[in-house]
Image (cartoon, rainbow, N blue to C red; front, side, top):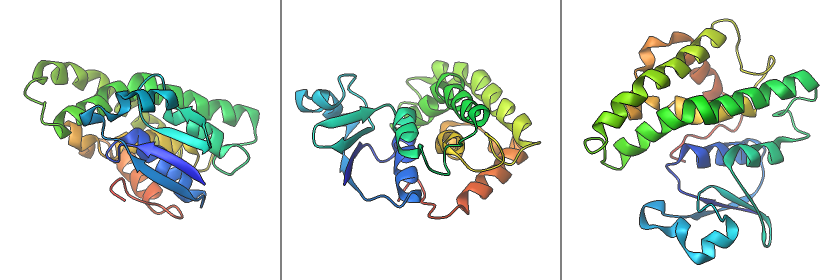
Length: 199
């Protein structure tokens, strides 16, 4: 059985939890409270020297970190990762986009609001608005013409972008401006074995 070391409110952890559930794989959840420094202990740093969550323990003492790398590992050979070479590259393209152009603005903003630091980081939050909306705008334009992000079906590219997009409102972003994104969110919520971020 897999062991998932996670901080439950994290979208990066939710990606992995959602994929594991949709693949119908058994896993044990182990909560790591990052607010109490539990990802920085010597014991945890053996699992991930970078001191971050999530971490997936594949078998005893065999660990994999970085959420998108974990999703890639789990999805190979399944319907969540295409067999077509170009479509596989599209999946990776959107996952890189998520990490570089999306997550640093939308996820970080949400984290500051969740942890009561919005006032402390008010100026930084304002600076994250424009690039965050730019990322959402790019997604909107894609989804106006496509149901999913890589090819014509639901893949880990969708899971990767869904995790923080569907809760972007918790970080101060107005999703009512993006009808195609809202339709896509609804489409993902009816996928088999869907679970919410709070489950």
